[in-house]
Length: 444
Image (cartoon, rainbow, N blue to C red; front, side):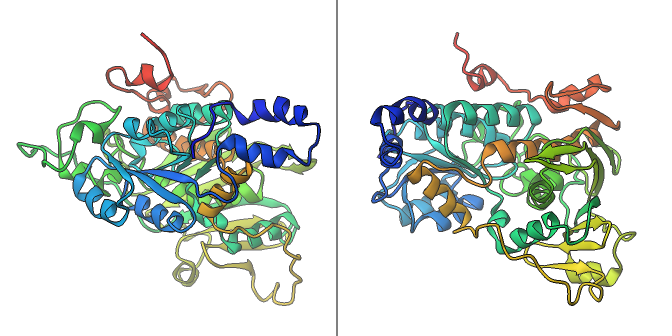
């Protein structure tokens, strides 16, 4: 059942007061969202395979898959056969017009995350968007602001956030198990990028693919299969390389544990900058300011990202083999290392008998279920866009520093590199035709 277009914030401030009892408010709020506790949320999925298929798997038993959209009919058809009652589309702008939809999953390549999310929220739908939230910082900022303005229930697809391991790490850091945190290192051994722009192109686009819709808002490109499924990650026009693809997962943990919001500078090292292809290896030094959050003071923090090359100066080859990709918190009393599923206090012999804090962060019922429950109960999620937006902006700032070849002094509020005017071309998106006017809701 679809929702009223009345924002939840307005309802909470006026409608609940009219009832005269806070006890009645939750029931009224669920009705306002158009989904009662006994109904299944109607979901539309944009991008039916890959991460879209993963989300469908996580939602099909707790929600109703009511619409499917994909620009590639070869990807759409087998999924549609599994959900014969779902309406199918090529264009996400048509899908969001389906009136019985309550919410939309955006699982497209990065370059259409922003426009699909904006279309859904503007149509009154709640949104689950895969990471990174968008391809450029300016898109992230607009999507984050629109989520606030429309009061939609949002969740970014950093699924690791829902696991128990990250919760236990956050509890250890915040309980002072390794003292004050002096620095953080984040590394990923895998890599994309390092490609050379194609010089020869097929004479025609396959009949199953709508290439114009695949491009969406970005500047015209000739069709090439190397710019489609999965391979788009190698190219700046479509994605942001390994940092954008994986950074939100791993940097999520220090963001959460240390109440980070935005960096004040970023400086990068990598191979020669290519205007088309993302770097096969990268090292980014971020600096975060001191801050006070909920009465707790955190000191200024350096955080370093690495991909494509292991940081051998902080771990031994044996440790890298054991942990693979991971995060290292360096404290005044020791270190804490973590990957997606495991963590340890270092040196391990020193902490063998150290007491662990009693768990104080509530367990998640699952990343997708958390989003669905929040829609039904008019609640919130742990990776809502006002948390995931600043995380994604920080991740993408590393790419800006790399592409400019300069240390970026970052004014978060102004969304500006104060020392590098050249950075604006990488901070702000460039859309073709009328897409930009549409993106910002301008008429005429």
